[in-house]
Length: 224
Image (tube, rainbow, N blue to C red; front, top):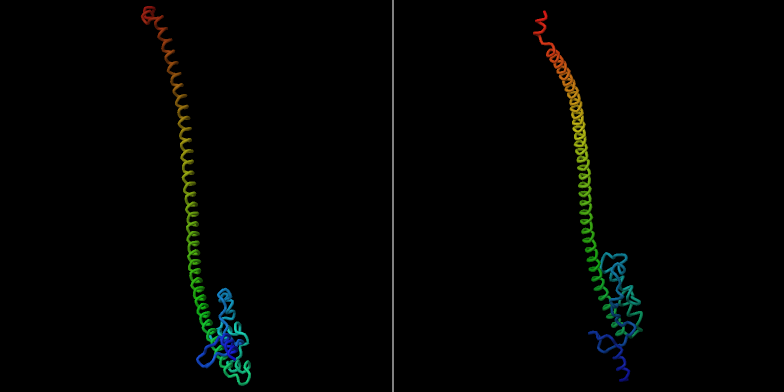
């Protein structure tokens, strides 16, 4: 008998305040929470996004606790034979511990989920603000580009007007130059005519002079 009690003491995981002696109840040992690597993303754990921590705790118990009856009484009655009230009590304690852990983890999951949603909303607001700023910058750039094109058109029109005026002035100057050349030709022709007339008059005057020298006026008078 002593070795058997020693074996039961080694196998029992429960040391509850309601138990006078340790009881082996390995079928209802407290299952530790899964390791961190098995705790997937919040969105995977909460696909249906429960509205309360109690509902989330029930889902966690369903996924992580084997053979979870509706209450601890059903758990104790279904597993323990008649006369084993201590085993039923241990099973109830084990179930209550697991349920408490499940509810605490459900509350933590819900808090993480709410924090994730809050961060997502903040990120959405930040993205919307950046998008609004980018759109405003794009409108401003478009306005500056349109103004630059308008200024370029105005500058081209002004340049065309200045070029037309320069061409007009050049044409007028060319006309004046041609007229001055024509006037110069006419003046030269007139000068040549006057010079020819002067030379002709001078030749005639010299001929008359030479003639008079050959026949002085006194000789004519004496001849008369």
